[in-house]
Image (cartoon, rainbow, N blue to C red; front, top):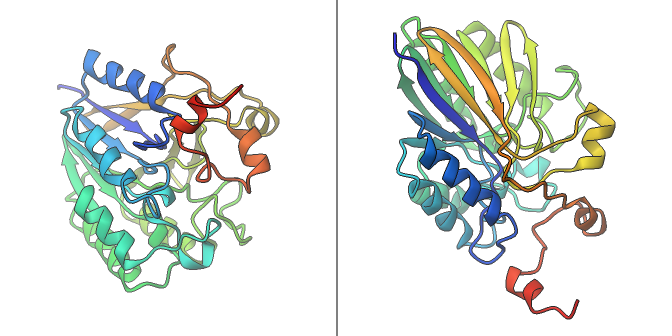
Length: 290
């Protein structure tokens, strides 16, 4: 039985004008060239600020396509915005932003059979949005699971389903909103999902929930060293997750390339409203007087 290699990369935050994380992406490109996987899934936040910087998304999608690998992607909040009631950056999901994703990247939700596995991708910005597409995505998930013909399933989403407590109903932009979380987890647990692969929080983590393994992919772009040392007691590093699909089994390993730089932007975000979307263009930094 031939095992298949699947790479899950997330939170690359690419931009043609804000090249803060380009070196780590270049390292990832070299990793993929040295040992090409059978398939690649990008876990969202391809771009730095695509909801308003309209050149970011086609630029990021072009960089991924240039890898020359079969690939799919799920949308992140830096790609299409957030559910309107959960929009920390005042960038709500809109029909125009969804259309841009479809034009430059692909469908908002999808399924892909790989070996004996079924892969499913979903847009977490739709969850709790109240938009018509939210109901359509729920129906798609149910149909994709019902028609899996016994295949084990791996679901890719950008935002994690929860942090510590799946029943936590607090307002949050860090995890799937509570209003949509319960039905999502019930549908997955009842429908043959073995793995939920997510990103968004820029840290590697794994938990078990109702027979499913939930695995956070780290970012290639940036980390928050202080927060993760305090909360996880682990020094965060950039990287990606490599899955090995062997028949109906799946194992994974965390890859932290030695040539990826630990870029901590928490100093900027602490002074700038908790976001990097307001960073100056990279050439502006190069012409400074420091």
